[in-house]
Length: 140
Image (cartoon, rainbow, N blue to C red; front, side, top):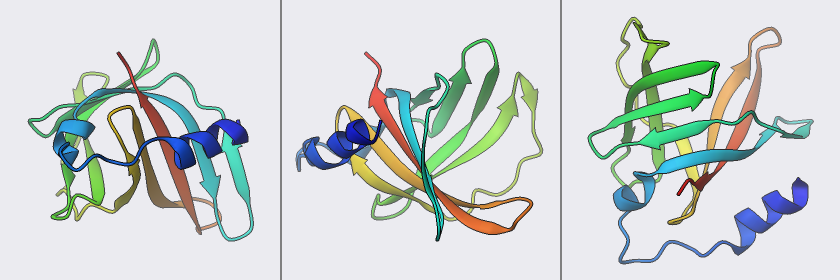
């Protein structure tokens, strides 16, 4: 798994100047890897099958087949280097909307076939800051 992660991050072609980030990000994606790390530990996680569909109208759907479905809104920051997802619906039930805060998930790599972004959060019990890199490949 570490070798796959290394290849995806280091050898996938860099964004082509004629492709806009909006054109690149608005795709159907499949999660293939996750890397969780904090100050003292790095773990490569084997994810469940997750499908992420990002639409040009600012909406998205995230599905774990036969288990979990969310819908919501997404946005990029002004220089398209960060993104944010806001869940509005789970399993068909509406959620209490909260304002879409400034995008904080850093885009590490974005090509026509690869989306890697880092999301920062806290482990609930220990209140330890943790980062998770999500690696998606385009679903054809």
